[in-house]
Length: 180
Image (cartoon, rainbow, N blue to C red; front, side, top):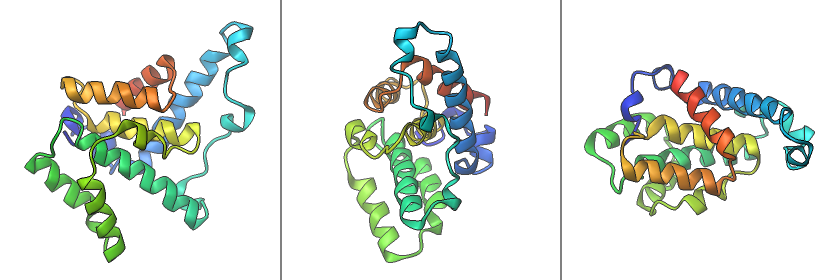
């Protein structure tokens, strides 16, 4: 279910992707801060200092890297829309509006291919090249999915598992998206 019951949220209202990076980064920062309160043996598995650096905005990345990250986030969005087994007419309308900026034949072909693929949380998670991107992919999925739908909730749980999100980070991302 695209934009789920959160259709009136600021995240959906303001177009989502620009605000998404900030929401996911805030959640990631809060999760990291909470890790400092954990036992020393748990800190050994905490993210590295490089992971603690703020992510570079997509529009400031080299073109190839921006393309990879954008496609990963958009792929997560499409999969979340299909998580209940189908895309309803209203969901298709929203997807069409969102992806109307894809004007090249290559972009349109990519979109059609993504829409035709089966939902596979393992494949989606494999696109996450770092913890920040994983957080963004999960956050966009949370913003789209109706968590009261069993199939969609199960998809989110599996996606979080495949993205290697800790339960605490998963909860923090869900909380921040709900506030957005």
